Length: 572
Ligand code: PRX
Image 1 (cartoon, rainbow, N blue to C red):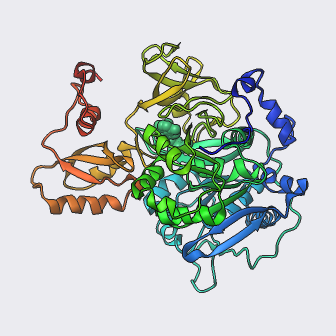
Image 2 (cartoon, rainbow, N blue to C red):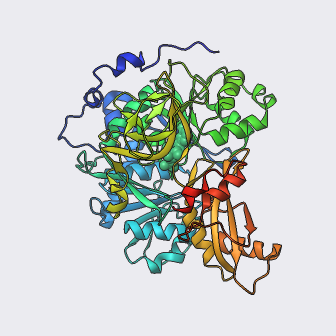
């Protein structure tokens, strides 16, 4: 075990006493009612503090290409992008999508769009055109920043998107002819805008729109506001324990909430240097990066940790990872073995952190300095009231060992303010004055939370949520498919993967060729993350008396679990 300096949080118990978010507001120099613009806080304010020359971003892409940006570079680049967007006529609160790999423009575009007062909608660059279409249509997105590599997908769908007025190609080199609605932008060739007044957004002005999958319906746009900064700033300070001389690495893509809350806002609002590696995962590449960049704080995910465990310890020994001082994980249950393993090989345990796209910031976590019970998520962040609710009455209880629904008292700064254009789904998230996470857990006698599973059928594969409904809908479009049920099955690395059960229409015979044909058919419709790894033909799907498909029965079989009391399922 490495010895650690006193953590930023100091004593957890002390912090709980008289906690108020207003202390974080004061640290940020924010007074209620004043303007608050996340991008200004991440750039101009840090420069005003005399840290303009400090490295903000150390970027590395394929072939070892490197780029380095100071906080002053971030300020200028975000000014330039903001001014370009305003020049195009992007008005406050209009949606601007970011659709590109993890290149610097993604990070700079995020800040630029917020500075312009737009609502920024980051989407994972691996999404296919249909995944992109539903999200752009739902948000009525006005502009999209993309690259030559991905613009083809936008071209395929733009006819269906009259709202999308500007397709901004950020790496246009003049060699690819631009098409309708497309405009070229190059930071390198633009005149840097020295003075730009960040849009005068207020605490409740919308800021970031992340899409997340539920059990039913299309993906929902989670609407966050500029005031979320207060949660993200303080959690980055106390949970990630970020300090002035840290080199911080968040491995998440900003297409997902971890990559924005803690891959942009949390660290940069504190003036912390962070690094980004835009190459695919291999243990060798990751360890080499930590060694080269002298990474001190590392925020990653259980799937990656399991993959590193699989790669073994010899490869760890070949690298100098002595710079590491604090490790944190998010997105899926962190198995006890992973914590014990990391303690053995890195001399540091991974600290679990539990939260959601909707919560915007970390809710329950193993704080630095607080005893870790491997396999537990530990305790709520100060200022967060988390409880378990009885599954039938939705009343909080304290019994240890009993499974309940994880619920949070509304009111923390980063809480979602709604689902885009879907008030009904938003209202369903609240019961008896609690926000319902949709997850189940138990509590132990020390008040530690232990994650049990989701309360719905959503599949968490490698930390990405997949809606069974979305996959089933895609399957049903195939002419041979009569019915389908999509569930998770266990996987050594990704924890869960997607499996589809399919019944065929009369006249179609089961065959491997047909399976392959169905796979290829849905591949065009789904994001790669949502693709089933297996299709199984089945004569009949198990159903309730009212005709509802019992996914839970199929899932239990995959996981080798007791099917349990089906009498209740029968009446679902
Ligand atoms: O089921 C929980 C799981 O991931 C869900 C949230 O996913 P998403 O909105 O995509 O955000 C992921 C990154 C914040 C949760 O409802 N989850 C997240 N963190 C953990 C977790 N499950 C167990 N342990 C965690 N630490």
